[in-house]
Length: 53
Image (cartoon, rainbow, N blue to C red; front, side, top):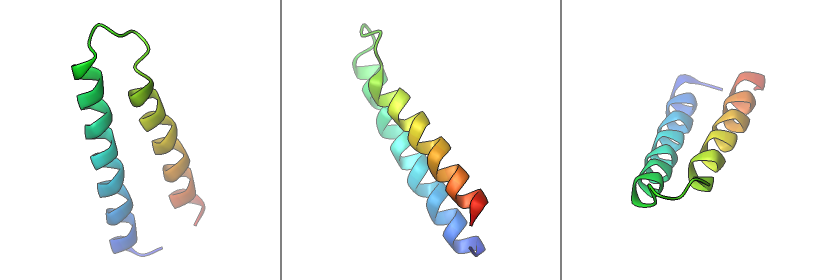
């Protein structure tokens, strides 16, 4: 995996994180925050994939 691929993965993850964060802000009264939890799970999976490749 080259530097450009790694940067693209992190940019994609950052975009997903922002969407999840906005979801949490929009639903600030909701304790579930499943959007944020899902983003964290995806981040862990993608980061591990990047490390393994």
